[in-house]
Length: 183
Image: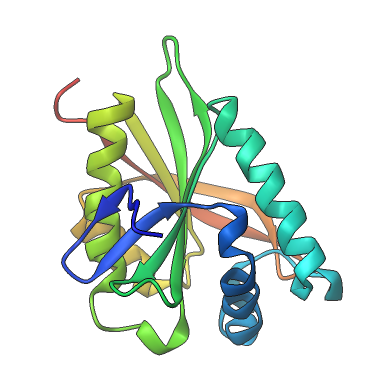
């Protein structure tokens, strides 16, 4: 797994592929409780290898059509997935935009990993895909994401009421976006 798409000081970002299935399952199981408050309600099957493989296959098809870009964040020695970063709803034409989503393993929180990862990933999206806008949304109570996105140059664009169904309940979200300085 030496073919990193993006390298940062401490991590490598790889396109999500079947070779990552076991590690992705471990990431999901290990961080189930940690991520529960910020993700959709998950069925027990979400934490099975069969469902992980199914989601990887689906993500590969989305990548092939150009509508999604799913990355796994790995340690330098590629023996562990420590986070996920995905750019979805990619639209070209007059919009040239996408949505950003991300998560980081609980044990890596508070050490600057996600900022490091997103600096590299956002740069890649702007330089290689030439998109004009990246949108990222977060729960109003998620101070950690709010501060991270602000440090990365994402600007607050408002509040969307009952925007996403998170952990079984419709939740408001703060809408943010970052514009490509080269467009």
